[in-house]
Length: 129
Length: 141
Figure 1 (cartoon, chains in turn blue, orange):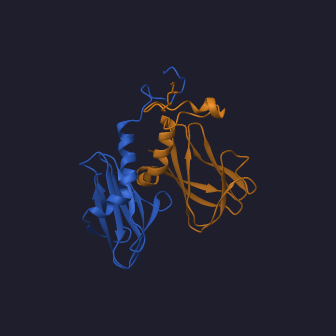
Figure 2 (figure 1 turned 45 degrees about the horizontal axis):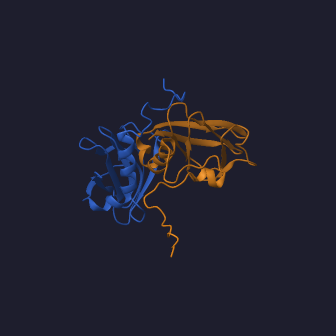
Figure 3 (figure 1 turned 120 degrees about the vertical axis):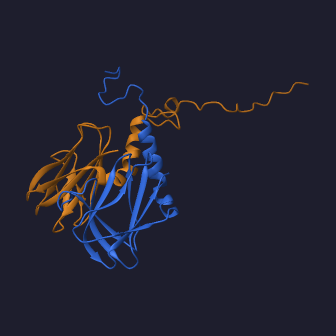
């Protein structure tokens, strides 16, 4: 128990290292996403694919975008068991900004395509800030 | 002959406490940001980028009924995202069951996502006249 009586207060009352890394990554995410070479991930409707796994850095910025003249709607989550109604739905379009997520160590990013209009693939890039 | 010394402003000194000048009891020295404020900032900027790692659940809004869709009883700043499922519908959100209505609530238009940051002990309520289903995701950044 701390002196302030605040059950949420840390003894040091300082930001953790993880929090500092997250905010640095979040600020720089949009600027760094274009600096990494993208790889192509093939998609099949309804089949979960592992877009990225963070096994190498403190914070990993993952960006993905549909191929040229394509729009792909799908679900994202931390595991392969993703169902409509209990997972976040995102739209990856070649015309819009890339979809971005931050992964902490050992976290994974899965994607389940639901609708594909155009090329059935995503361009995925990973950056460590 | 006497000269009055020219008074040069002191350099590199801390600014005076603004509260004594402005009378604002909540004013803090310039440049000072509390840890709580930093956490709100982090949640606001990084919350959307962490949605894939959050906790998801489905919340059904019954027509004309206020529903509790988010509750922060576990973190410093909880990022809550509500995404409409199926047919798009409009609804209203508020911090308590009385304010989540068509008169006082914040309108969320059909097809739009609602994103809010809840501090410890805060709740998020929703009201829809037509009803609908939300996918609510909570992220502790």
